[in-house]
Image 1 (cartoon, rainbow, N blue to C red):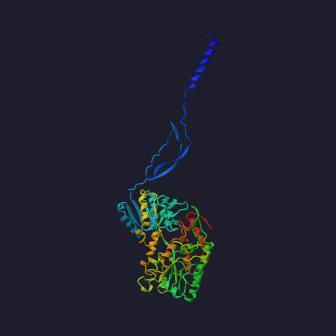
Image 2: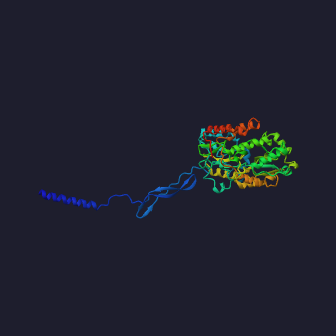
Image 3: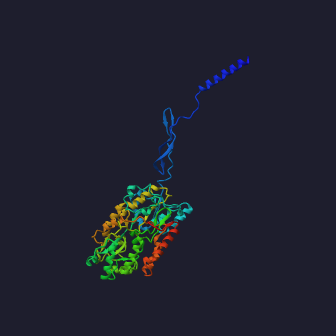
Length: 487
């Protein structure tokens, strides 16, 4: 074969190869739509939830094929027992829960321990990695401390478990101490203790006085009393918790958290200074008791009818004025104690009060049966069988209403007019939620100065800078930053 013929044959074969190759369908990926955000349903923590995920959707023969997410394992066990730790005063509430739900009788294990041992026990359980209580009853500042890294973030966030419509029925501000700066609800308030202005019904009428509604009116009345009825008391200079009794209601920024890591402490703020001056002025008039709310000398003033007004938590009507100050079986004292809303400054837009007591229920993040734990917590804080017979005013407003309305039946000392329920209802909704203690405690810093002031060794104005320094030290000791100016 000639060289020319060979070249022609090779050319034909090349062309034929190209034709054959062009007729073969290349291997390609299935066509796709643009990535989409789709919703899939999963089982998370025993609850059906909808989750948004990004998916690439393949198109095959004009049929869209999507994958269904596999359910996650439920980490909880609704048959697991729960351990409840509270004091003996709350034992009847847990008993009522078991009585109402006998099916849980073998699942609720009750521990009646003093609240003071809770944190020590918690450290022990954290060290061994077991034994945690599922439901706790204690003070909100203790629960806030238990929710820190120091205690391995013990408290669970109740927000996903408590219906919003239930939370909305609590008194405004009641659950503020249970709410962290990042919005977690670490407890549910059991009871509240707003301040009340008590007054001597007979003396107020016989002496021709009117119950004051402002601090300015209160001071003017004190000036008259000091002249016309010397020796008569109108309040207590300390009364156990002066910061909540007087300063919080004045919107004094004693210990107000402004972030997860910082507190505002400004006892030199004008709102604090004018209250300090008011207390010193009242003390100068001789109308302030100086022995403390629980002292026998204070009780003697009441028994001798040498009192006109008194300021204290709502529970004092049941546990101090009744029994300690006055004998409820003595007909001479029947209906002698009136109850009115706390006074405010004339330029304040509304009445505010501190809560002189009250604690809360919380759930452990370690619990294996949160459904039962939450059911118990809701029962002991909201069920009428508990709230109507509780020793203090319920934080749940329907229960607090019933408790307040039943006060007269419990204490014949309380006057029917003005209606004590009105005062308690107003003050129950006036708790100033700006001040949140725990881990730092204002009382730990203020109490020594209050004792000196009662003893006549100092004044509130004179001690203001030292109190400010003590408060700052308390916050720093607890591991927080401090802002000392504003708001």
